Structures are given as C-alpha cells and as structure tokens.
Length: 143
Image 1: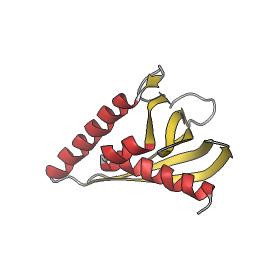
Image 2: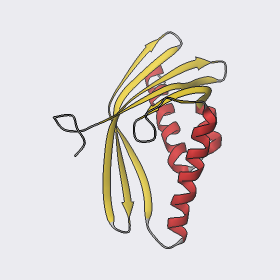
Image 3: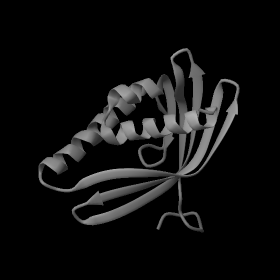
C-alpha cells in the first residue's frame, strides 16, 4: 500500500471512530498533544486528546439515545477531493468533509473544509493537528 493510501485509510478509520464512538481507535489514531481549531465548537484552539474523547463519547451517547427511543439516526461521511502531501515524518491531508445525517425526518447534509496533519511516530501515524473551516457562499458570512 502506498503511503498516500495508508494515510487516507487512517483518515477514514479516524473519522469512523468518531461516529462509532470507538474511543480505542480514536486514541490510537490521535496524539495525546493534538491541537484543533473547530469553528463550530469554540473560537479558541482546543488542546489535547481528553477534550475530544469526552466529546466523542457525548456525541455517541446522544446518538444512541435517539436510536433507543426508536428514532433513526445514522451518520456517514465522504472525503471529497483529498490531497495528501507527505514530507518525511509529516503528512498533510486537505479535503472537504461532507457529512450525511439520516434521521427519522429525512437526510441532512453539512460540509466544511479540513486540514489534518499526521506525524509518523513509533506507534504509527497519528493526528497531531486539525483545522476546520466553514463553507459559506460569498460574501463569506453565515446565512
């Protein structure tokens, strides 16, 4: 498998661990000192793995509660136009993340641009930084 395919497979595994509430896989694919800019969560940089483990668990509990209440709730993602750039022990992946939420009310989509930076460590590639940017039509203001 080429390094580019390896990185894209890792990205898919990492993203699926979020929707599946798989904290073990999320921890394996994420560095303890990871940093995030997530415009829809905070205007500040979010540091460290612990926040995202709590966030992933909370989102999974909320999704499971909907399902147990008899509601349909499925999450899928598409990584659109990925570009992988490998520079030694660092890999940058830029793409548009399309999210599909299938619920009892129908299908809803969201999308935003992401840059994820992975670092090759003794345990393998791990996410060390993620920057998410909203996608709004001109004039660059939310509707």
